[in-house]
Each structure stands twice: as structure tokens, then as C-alpha cells.
Length: 330
Image (cartoon, rainbow, N blue to C red; front, side, top):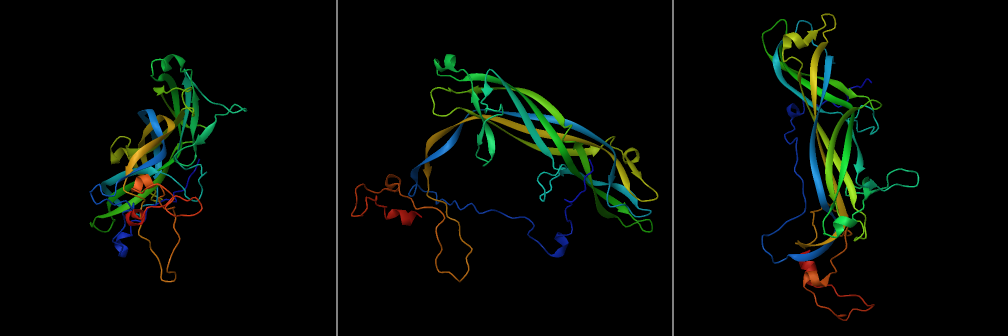
């Protein structure tokens, strides 16, 4: 698999007069530190009944990895200023084979994933907005009598495929001068092909609540993230560097370490009462053409939460009155 490096960073941005290369977000949540506007709110969320976190490590050797751009004729390498690694991702093609992908495959013992009629796992939408949760069924009769959870055991195979980008900052001097400068070279390292991925295995145990005393079957979800670290194979420029005298292309022997964190959860939908300071308010960025703009979310109508009183209050159509304090809080 050959991949082109189309994710190079532009290191010249700072020199172009742009001072704010990073930013901060606006959450819209403000609190004055008092309990004056705190009310109770019911929310429909997912409760985590049990979870486990695992750290996995993998290794990939990359001998003779060619970096670009090519070095100029007679360039002398003084030392390595920095070497770093990051995940490859092509935002123009989410199915690009070079995109670094983590695919966890899990099998259960003592329980099972609920299947469709065609034998595939039945998945439901998780908080990430995609079908990332599997329904779990286990015989919880014995442990239900003790009001405790039932253990299930799992085997996980984490498949890693795609590429990583390695960037190399070199301190060099040209052949006709002793003035040092820093140049950045980059390369794309193939970790594994999608048809033959790198596989890491681990085992785990999770606790499942009752499948009978609930309106919902427990759900299993897992999320993984990967970072990478790289170094020279023998930590020696003399042994790991080779410059082609004809083309000036630098070849380097590398070792890439894959650092993976995977978390597995057993969750069930629940209702919670939480303390809230009201709906989120974000300051709009508006022009001068319109005098008013529509709301994005409805106003609060729970009079118990905002201190209202019951009764019709003279409102027609059987509507419940909205307390005047609502507008003040919002």
C-alpha cells in the first residue's frame, strides 16, 4: 500500500503575521456562584453500570523509510531537533485505505450479543450519534436474587490498519556555509493493510445488571484511541541515516510504537434529576438586517422547576402557565 502525505503541516503560518494559531471555545454555561437560579431538571441519559480501561501496545519497524523533500546537494546533518508521529487522516475521503483505523472485535462468554435474523449483531445508537452499542443478553436469574450483577467475560481483538505520519526536524548546514538552519522532512509509514491488520488481543470481565427487571436490555459499547511514538531504530544517525548521493533523498530506519487505550462499558438508559442553572445561552453573532431571530430551543415549561404555581391562571386552551421568572432566568 502506497500513500501520499497530503497532511503536511504548514510551519510558515507563524511567520505570515498570524498570532492566534489556537482558539478557545464558548460553552455558553455561566454561573454566578449562588444558588438563586438553581432548579431541578429531569434528564434522560445513559447510566454506566460497569466499565474497564485497557492500555495496549504494538510495535512496527520501518527500515529504509524515505523522507521528503529531498536534501540539497552537500547538505550536512548536524543533529535531530525533534521527531514526532501522528495519525494519518484524509478528510476528503473517510474510506481512504491510508486512514489509521482501529477496529475492536469482541466476543462474550457467559453472555451474548443480541442478533438479527441474519446473524449480525443488533446495534443501537449511542451518545456519539452512530450505531455503536450492542444489546447484551445474559441469564441474570441467580444474581438477581442477591440484587447483584452477573459477570460476563470477553475476548477482544483490536485490529489496526492504515498509516501514520512521521515528521523529522533536522539541524543542517549547507555545503558552502557553517550557518545552521532547521528543516522539516516527513514521511508516511504503513502500519498494516486493511486485509492484513495488526492485531492486539486482551481479555476482560464486566458486570451486567438484570435483563429481566428493566424495560431495556443492557448495552455494551467500546471506544478506542491511538497515539504513536517513533524513534530511530538504533538511536544512531550514523547507522540509521542514509542519503542517496544522486537524488539527495534521506532514508531512515524507524521504530514506531502504537499506544492504544480502549474502554468498555455496560450502560442502560435511565432518568436522573440534576441541579441546573437554566438553559444554555450563547451570545449570537448577528448582522444588522434582522431585528429579531427565532429560538433554537423551547422555553422552560416545568413550573415546579422555576417556582411557578399550579392552576390554569386564566390561560385558555388548557395550557399550563409559564412562570414570569422563566424569562428572568433565561
